[in-house]
Image (cartoon, rainbow, N blue to C red; front, side, top):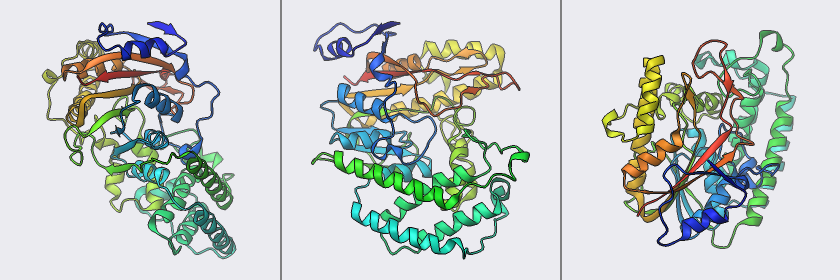
Length: 442
């Protein structure tokens, strides 16, 4: 691995019309991607926490340096919408897709252009209505389904539902209503009985529950003010030629709403492994989605992690013979020696992963660029080099590897430790680096 402090040399390699091919496994550490001490919650990036996000500055720098003339950008794993916000700020058209209804809502709210004065007026009206409810709350029974009684204290749940009811009564367009629902989503997670700092559903200690009495109404008002300030910052920095992104709910392996060759850039941070054993996006979103009523299908909400890549409900039509990656084969052989069951789980993830790459190949125009921001996880003590696997699988589709940039992770919202062996008490630090794999369709 080589180190350098500037992107200039890397860019020079990328821009040489007939340059020699960069070594296939070249990884170059770029300190400019670390963004040490830089704010990452400007504009609408501040709106809502989400696990394992691509921070805005990383998306911005990648779009500026490597997608200069590429003006139609796709993020097939849109998550919190970081790529779409940055594409919008750079005047690029963009599309996003996700299977998590909360991620879809979040991305839409963060990229809509609304009337700032109207938002401020609604904020005042909402605050007055909520203040009127504080001493005269309606009574909402905690439903027995979905185990919500386990995750919320009755009085806190009642306050959340009172706020939701006030929002529902607003005489405004749905886009405005969703703007004010999103902070309620984040608040629901904050005031629940989920342990602080957890993305999975782990309940706080029993002895801590009696003293858990957060200020629901004050917390909501604070989040609304923060979001309006962030939205104002977005408006101030929008170029005249901005495009409102198009966000779709759906599986990234089936982008049937996009025509062949219709995008010229793909920038995304895909899952690093199956959701259940890495970042449980479904678990993280479950309580928020229930409070907001994003889906009346409770079973579907509980099964998001099964439907994402590698999940038991998303079995691929491909087989291991379809994956021409020696790096993956070597890792699977090593894992098989330790844990055959985990081998099948890892293989299942990469089968679905490759299906997404095939769909990206279909929708990407000739000469289009791809930047995949990935992390290399450990399973059963085996380091899985997803950056090399990604490069090899894209090359299998006929694409050219331009280089891989490495960044030190400063602010990745992930657990500090995990259990790669799934053995009780045996943990290790989670990944501290990300790899930006840059490919070109030529």
